[in-house]
Amino acid sequence: MDSKEKTPPARTRRQDGETTRANILETAGGLFAELGYEATTAKEICLKAGCNLASVNYHFGGRDGLYAEVLKEAHNRFISLDLLTEVANSPLDARGKLGRIIDGMLDGLHSEGWHLRVFMREIVAPSAMFDQVFNTRISPKLAIIRGLLSEITGISTDDQALARCFLSTFAPCTMLLVANRHMVSRVMADFWTAEGELDFEDLKTHIKTFAFAGLDAVAAARRAKGRN
Image (cartoon, rainbow, N blue to C red; front, side, top):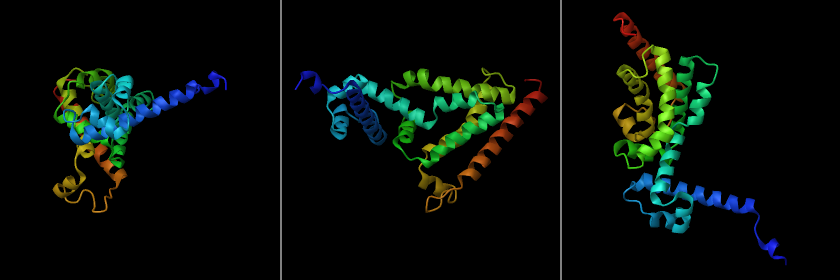
């Protein structure tokens, strides 16, 4: 047989490499979510993923590079830049766009993947890789959202009041996504039923109603003081 016929096609090798990379990323995400960054070793990841250290180094440049990619993927699953960009470029007005973003975040309640637990750990104890993820993934998303909040309220994007508006608007969504459902249900009178049921559409409407009422109230108060 001709030696050339023994060489797998480049596309097959590329697909195998993509599969290996995805497997390592998914496995690492689960372990980092369960154990945390400091307690998760590359050896442990390789053992569970069924790969060797050379594969981790090849695809991610080592454990730190792998964790950075896990953080990027976790934040992307939390709310993707693609979604935000699509919404920002849509013909909706600013209120419609912000409402769509809130809907997109709350859609994450249907998922209980590792990304939410990784995200929660990073909020509580930021890692050394946070700055890298912030600059490449988080900052562009914040810029889009700040712009919408500014358009709705008339408050400048560099005003501390807008930061407070951001917190009040998105803290409820974030809390629902990262909190333990059983604990939330116990504290807030069966927010989720024993069967895990929740009227998502009513929840979205409720949170948006409060968010827009709050933004409108802040904007009106500042106008009354001549501050907008």
